[in-house]
Length: 130
Image (cartoon, rainbow, N blue to C red):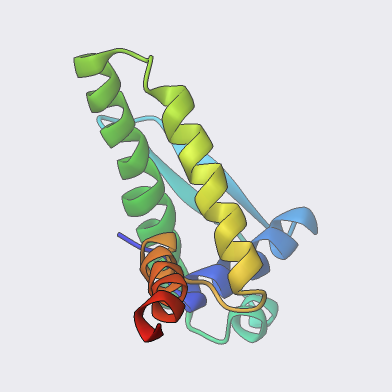
């Protein structure tokens, strides 16, 4: 799953509310364990996120329960199969992609997968015109 611009905005607003201690993230120990968002779901939360309490809970669960935890599940499965020797490569590539994304899109979030082909096409055009 890929993050959207709305996800990026949600994470920035969530960070502000966690830093101000209006909200917090806790782990519920269960089989399987999961993360929950704790805090006052009052008018401040509604104004900050511009969505209902249920919308805030849904996006939090999607980002932290589905995307974030699932990414680690995938990493654990791959490392169990191949070992950890590929980890350094993956970290380096992800940092490169993040830097590329920051370089190309200062204000909007796009997946590096979609940016690399655009850059390759732009570099190929001058050669094609000759």
